[in-house]
Amino acid sequence: MSQTEKISGPVGRSAMNHPKDVVVVQKLLNGHFERDPCRRQLRVDGRWSQELERAIEAFQLLTGDQVMIKGRIAPATRMFELLKQPPAIFGYERRMAQRMRVEPVQQASTIEVLIFDGRLISTGSQWGHAAIDLDGKVYSQSHSRYAVLERSGYLSSNLEYRDVVGLTLRVSLAEKAKIKSELDSRVAAQKPYSLTDNSCSTNVAEVLEIAGILAHDPRFQMVPSSSRMVSPKELLIAISRSDRVLKRDNYKKGS
Image 1: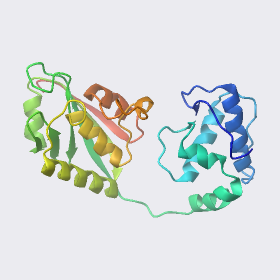
Image 2: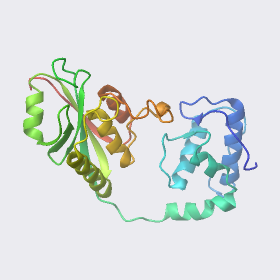
Image 3: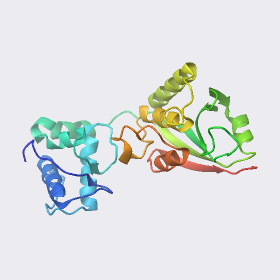
Image 4: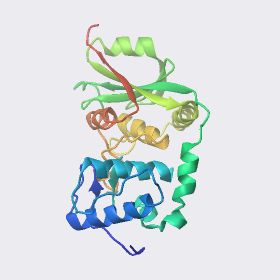
């Protein structure tokens, strides 16, 4: 396969999977897997399968790059450019050796994303609200200001009139520090509220994605007019699908 190979649509998990595109990806993957005696070659038949999806995931792991969707290769992306590289240039054996090394265990930590039901009488919260809890401090962009509030009092006052969903996410200490630094800078900046690009939920989504946690619908990532705007409900759906989620808590109104 040459470096000029192209695919017209995504191949892999929940993708379009046109047979011609699938054949291209199968052949390119097999070119890399020839360097791995432990991996079986894929059948080049133009059909999507879970085996193909797992093979794409295995390749994505070796790249070390941020992956938008596990098990999917999309056209005109860095991941597809890496897949098209000759195995000797990509360095399959070297990457495998690095992957197999025993790495020191990284300390893990957590954050909680809070998604609130809508409240018609509250300006800016008619469609819900979103905030991030870091160690008992809730970072919340409201219509009037970006505030840092004590979790217990903030959650209790909101539960008087609406339900709240809490998603606890696994993050590394470095990721958590990056999230805190970004949140603190936004609180200091106090940019004016905007429903389209500086709302509670767009802030949460942008901060999470700075740390590598997908928080938008990936189908709209390449559309400038819609890639930033995200509602609390859309945020909840996107984050709920993440493998970072350790638990979901449903805080009921009046509790």
